[in-house]
Image 1 (cartoon, helix red, strand yellow):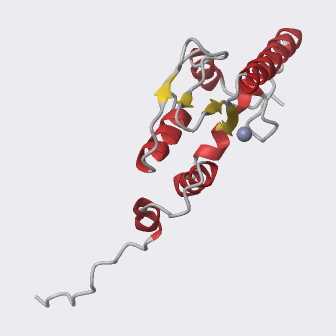
Image 2 (cartoon, protein in one colour; image 1 turned 135 degrees about the vertical axis):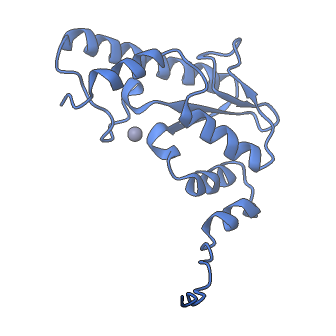
Length: 159
Ligand SMILES: [Zn+2]
């Protein structure tokens, strides 16, 4: 079902080949907090991967749910020009498969993190830690989950 407004659609369109999207920035900042070293958008690798971790020989693609057809609730399909979109999505999906296969043949371990999985930063950081075999949780996670202290209820002074 086409539930996306023209404004949102045009924003999505502008991001088709864009970098530095919000989901990508979320993954980057988590990886950074975990102390992982990575390179961005490596051009000489298939698919120009979003994050490349040379030391771990790992690659992370941060995929938009709409363009790469995650299958979640954000994977909407426009009502108009259906054949155009069908072809476009098929091409995107087969390109993704081709790129990942080529990288794996070269000895890379490839992970895909979906846009919808980047909303919960604490969960994302835990997931990344697991991917890289980091068993100690970084301090930032416990800081994020610690409840914020309310100001003490000082009695109002009477007039
Ligand atoms: Zn999704």
